Length: 254
Picture 1 (spheres, rainbow, N blue to C red):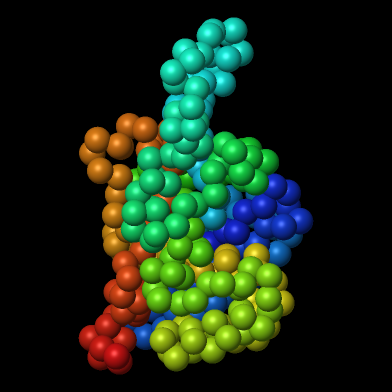
Picture 2 (tube, one colour):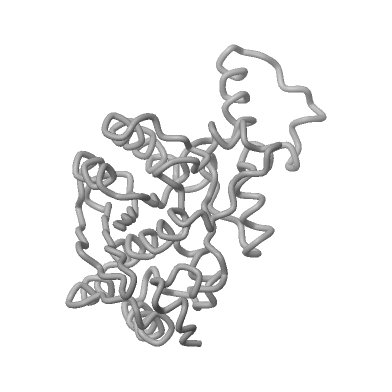
């Protein structure tokens, strides 16, 4: 089994790609690249059983409807223009569920710093779709929206400062060695310490393993239609043993 993880940026320069090969006894980091173009990601996605991409796959339905209505010059009713209404434009349903599960809001794709990256993601999903068929943004397929920071917190790792401080990432890798002895990073661990994008790409590939095994909860039926437009964050199980290679799961090294 090969899984892939992408830490997407607004441009190629900040985009990282990782692949992990899974056997019954180990998970081996086979590649870790930075400044990765879309065509390379699409080619890897064609060979992977699951590809996790760290970026929102779409915008809130309410936000899309608001922008379209505003462009048509339609009036906004005064009682609807308060902060509670604006929050419906800022967050997708999957963002609300993620907050319930993790205790923290994801960045808003419509009001925060993700807009340009989400535009890139829309183009990337089309590029990937040209190789493997249309991407289902709800995660019902071989591509999933992932959230590395939230996944690390679900697994019990501290995430404060890891995006900006190499020493924090080095500490996290030491914890990885203790809690995931089956994960073989080799010399590429140095790049994970040096580059936070590379670090998140590896985490995304780990979450892709959970997605491939069917361990990431799908959207509830009532939200499935909107998730196919907005996207849905694939959250892994809290127990890392559930994604471990089979021999480690049966041995239960805890």
